[in-house]
Image (tube, rainbow, N blue to C red; front, top):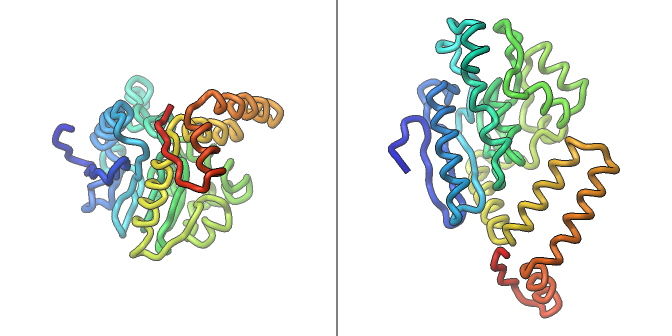
Length: 259
C-alpha cells in the first residue's frame, strides 16, 4: 500500500484497521481524504487475506464533519460536474466485506454519515452524533437524511436534521443508531474483537448474511423474505455449511475453508 497522508492502516490478522488521521482538524473530511479512502478500500476489497474492516478515528473525534474551509467557496457548477466530497461517498456503502465503525468523540455531519455507511457502530461513552448541516446553510449530502431516518425513525431524524442537535451515545444506543456502547478505553478493542469473530466465520456465509440484512432496508418484506430463503437454501451448496453443522453435532470448533 502506497504512502498515506490522511489514513493509517494496520493489520490484525484478517482484520484491517483503517484510522482517519487528521487530528489537527478533528478528522474533518476533505477531498484528499475521501480520494485516499476510495483507493484504500479498493485495495482491501481485492486483498483476499482481509475479511473485515474496522474504521475509526481517535478518542476525540471519529470525524467532526466535512472540511468547511475547503468547501465554502465551492460552486454549484463544480458540485454538478465533479461532485466534490460526494464523488466518493459510496465507497463504504458499496463495499462487499463487513465494515465496523468504532466511534469515539464527535461523529457529526459527514462523520455521522460515514459511520452510518458501515455495517454497525460500536461507540465509546463519549461519542456524539449529529447532522448539523442546517446550522451552516445546507443539508446532509452523504445519505444522512435517508440512513438516519431508517435507523432512528422520522421523528428523531427530523429533530436532528432540523435543529442540528447532537445525540449522545446512550440516546444513540436506545434509538438504534449504534449497536453497543463501551468505555473509552475499551471501545476499539471491542470492535476489533467483534471483527475477529466475524473473520473466523465462513466468508461466503458472512457475505450472504450481510446481503440479507441490507435487503431488509431496501425491499418490501415479502421480497426480502423470498431473497433470504433463496440465500438460506444456497448455503447448503457450501462445504462450510456441512463443516459447520458437523462440528456442532461433534461438539468441536468448525474449520471453515471459505467455500
